[in-house]
Image (cartoon, rainbow, N blue to C red; front, side, top):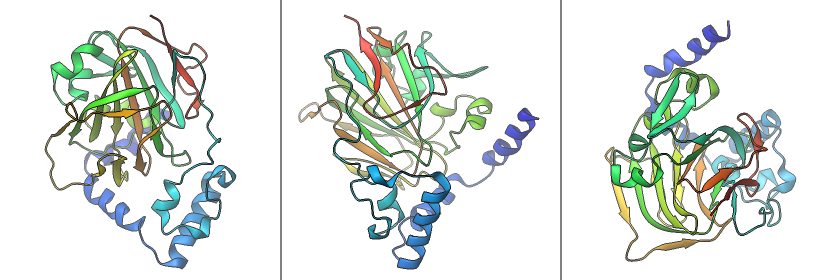
Length: 286
């Protein structure tokens, strides 16, 4: 029955207009009409049991529109960072979807499915080479989670790539049934040099993820240019410190982290476990 239920949820996604529906969500979440946005926010808080006490602004009625509430900042000390010079912290609140070693160029998605690290990074072997045989973690953000994305380690951003694609849901059912899901969906790839070696942080879009943005380039999606786009920061690199905000999802999705071979995941973490931004995700082993 579970397999049938999954198929009922997933099959329509192959035919619906992903980007049109996400565009409609983009408009809906920015309506400023007081009665509408207050009801939208109030219903969402009740439905997902959102903890407003940890928000920097705990008053739901004071937000300009739903998206401003959805991407709300937290209190300064709400997410303490795991200590230690070798610590890699979670960049987001969410759930550990999968984590482990990259099998050559294959990343485990779900039983029976993998996706290709070269395809994930926009088809560039040059970008993917440092991560072949390395380490990966896939972190899923549900609607109730905090949706800002932070640096897991101190790093220097040297390249960013926007890769167009579909907008399948990234929930458990779709992950189990859609082959190569994370390398098919729209995504934003941020490439860093860190003291632990190269790191890629990939923001994966999904149905109703109406926008992805970064603190250094602003809103990246939605875009009318459905073609690969590159940004190079070699001449003016952006330095980010551990825990510093990188960007945000305007509605929820998934972050994938890639490292080389010198990182070991926190053995206390397993697939399906919740995680908070700043929690120990891995350690670098020189």
